[in-house]
Amino acid sequence: MSMGSQRLETQTALLSVIAFTSGAIAACTREFLIDASTKYVAAQSAGNPLILTALASNTLNYTESDKTTDIYTCVLSQPMKIDLNVSIHDTALCATFTELIAVLIETIATKPGDWLFDAMGYLHWVSQERWDPIPAAKRDTREVILAAGDAYFNRFANINASVPWGQPCARLEGGAYTGQRDQTINTCDLGLPSTLRVTNRRYVVDEVVGAVAIYVGFPGLDRTVGLKPMPDSHFFRVESGKIRYIHTVSTCDTAGCGVNRTFVPGRQGLSMRAKTFSVCL
Image (cartoon, rainbow, N blue to C red; front, side, top):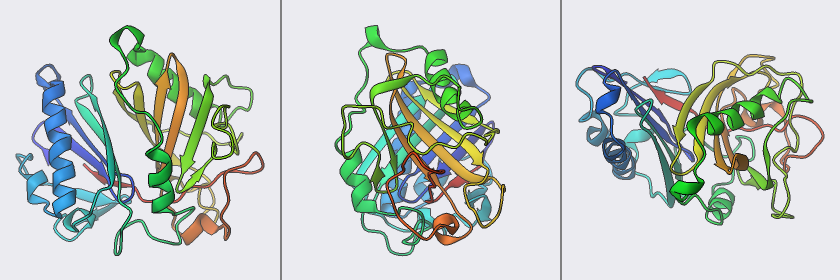
């Protein structure tokens, strides 16, 4: 979405992201970003893109799952009862990331048949997590938070890569939660690949809540299209330099990414994710 010197990115469906980047970084305040993400949530709730397009100074280019889409007929134009939302705000990049959870969805980009799709399950687990602001004295630096997220993806290509796993740590994929049997240990490392290089990483970081959202192209995610990168994002909570929570959202060309079964990610094989990724550029 073009907004003069600003760019807006958004990911919609069960998980939604809105991100602004601006050439006038010095003028980007936390208050400005909070106002922007608040307007995004309001626009999605009402199904009224005008609330969002009012932020743009020029023509808006909206894409869903990497395809240009008319913003007035896309997911954003459909009213949605939002059951839970979490936003982070990156004043260094002038960007925001908003995770939306909507249980009642009919015609929408994310749908039953996508990998591990379970809106009620997703809401259940996220509502039990803590994403509160971290006290100032205990906050990690931007560099530490970024390094934790990068270490996770570096592990995808090297099983010996060091990742700062927390104790506990849990990963959420659709309605499947790695920590559902034991929330006192690290289960974030379950089912990770060891031969995939994940590049083209884009970041939104918020030191106040110890969070980083990373957008990537995930090769090998959809087994029906080989190593074609699938649009994917991972949302991390980092506490004292350690990864506490991971939320994932991805898209598949084929329902279920070519794997016709549903399970909680385990230590055998690649854990697959399939939801929806939409971007306004």
